[in-house]
Image 1 (cartoon, rainbow, N blue to C red):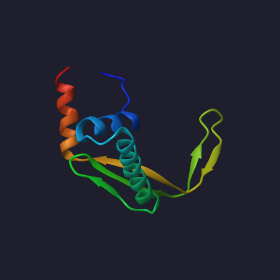
Image 2 (image 1 turned 120 degrees about the horizontal axis):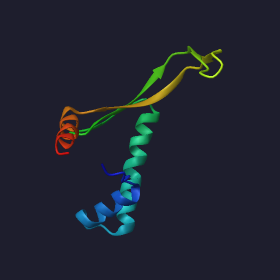
Image 3 (image 1 turned 90 degrees about the vertical axis):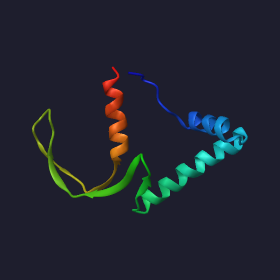
Length: 101
């Protein structure tokens, strides 16, 4: 399995090669898409990318946790967390990639 991480720079380079925009325009486009996705999530919306999956923010209630070292109970404050649910096509694609090994 490859430990390669896909970065913003990689995405910008792919847009540059595939679409033909300049490097600066490609970088600006990737940055703008990420900004729009982030803004939608911060505002409580969802980001659905067809054949990929859905990003959403959900609220987690306050609960009691436990310090694993001491066993002491500690309150965990309520918070919002980012979640991702892959599409069935993405799940199948990943599963098929596992079969090739």
